[in-house]
Amino acid sequence: KLYDPETSSLIDHGLVLWFPGPHSFTGEDSVEFQVHGGQAVVLALLETLGCQPGLRPAEPGEFTKRAFFSGKLDLTEVEGLADLIHAETEAQRKQALRQMEGELGKLYEHWRKSLIHCVANVEAVIDFGEDENIEHGVLDQVRGEVRSLLEGMEAHLDDRRKGERLRSGVHLAIVGPPNAGKSSLLNVLCQRPAAIVSPYPGTTRDILESALDISGYPVIVSDTAGVRCAVDPVEKEGVQRAVSKAKSSDLKIVVFDVSLLKDQLRDAELNKSVLDSQMNSFLESLGDDSFSEEDTVVVMNKKDLLQSTPGALPTCMRESLCFVSCKTGEGVDAFLTLLKKHLERLCGDPLSGSPSITQTRYRRHLCDCTGHLRQFLSESDSEERMDIAADQLRLAIRQLGKITGRVDIEDILGVVFSSFCIGK
Image (cartoon, rainbow, N blue to C red):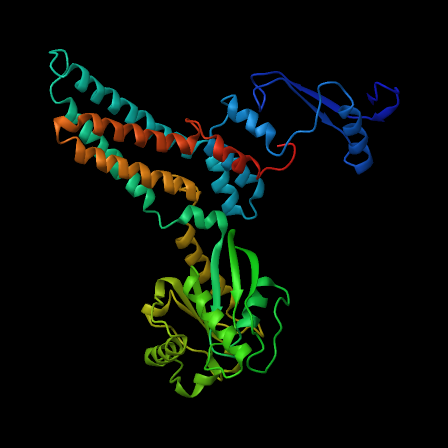
């Protein structure tokens, strides 16, 4: 039973848990009150605790901040915890949990310790270069190790931003001519009437965005205005926004009205030249020829209006084209399967291979680190510039330390911990 020590009145029946340091989350002595979750109960307990000497409400992220300063978490684990708290999809949860468990931090710490060993050897050569106790060929070994580390970091950076994309969401733009069924496709994906659908061309004027969970991946879907040579100034602005959104998106869904092509389909087979003609005509109106099969899915909508079902697609089209009917739902499952393959390619498997870069600041520090390593390899060819070369290694170590929090980084801590809720 929990009582107010001032009035001796009963607050609630609950459970009190004691976590002695250094084995608690923060590394300090901690206590946890588990009470009934009603607002009045929680407020009464907080008011009572607030009246006790030495107690105050925690600031946002303060418990995690204390865990960081006591060495329980490094900065990548802290940010992994923040991502786990804010994870909205299964793939985001897996990636955040992997980072919170320290896999990313261990990789960067391994690189940092390897560079520290390299600096120690270079310093030994500088200070005791003429001493017979210095093993011959130490500098060559250091250069070889630095080259190996540089290759590993460059491979880590060459990940097509999969981790960052998974963390923030894949940007998907639905584009196509007017009345092809773009808004209908958005409604199918959202499983609700998110966009107005009408038989009149030009209904959609502005960009309509919806954040969705598609097969466990976070996707920001944008429905856009039908692309055509518009005369109305409002529709013209909508077309320009559609073109801009398509160019900046990670994945494009190009929707066509297949019923307009029914006279060109022969023997239940899709003629590749028909699709090429449609795409070329659309790209010409879009003013962009940068679309590729890798980042584009072509949806032939209104399949229900065809008298016959198209037969097997040519092999070259199977990964980029599908027939659907947003009205009847026919072909939607096949479309979602195709879409999932593209999302897996864009985001990767968060549990396989090396952990991915998840923060823009990680990438920035790693790029700076690799720059210093290249400079070291350049400077270390000259014995006269060995001091400068050693400084480049120290700067590289500092960049890695900024990622994990192994250096003075007070200027970014406020930003990191402010993303947490009160009490975490």
